[in-house]
Image (cartoon, rainbow, N blue to C red):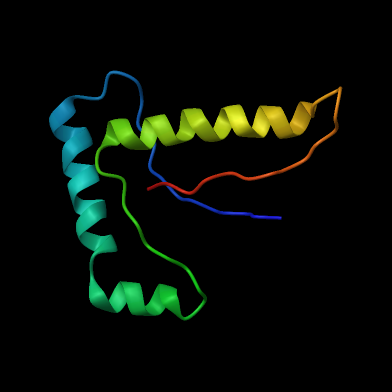
Length: 88
């Protein structure tokens, strides 16, 4: 099994772009903090950040499609491989 866990913030649809970007930029800054990275690394946790809110949305869309494939399985061959990619 290849299991990944990711975290993200979600805002209501229609949230003004400056608000979205302020939260995004603050999150990226926190993820780049050396002390935070060291703390997370103690448990083997990596702290990559998405390059943009849109990239994170695309990651969610890809992961959802993969989860649906795994959940339903392939009726002709069974489940051969299960992988959900972390945000890049």
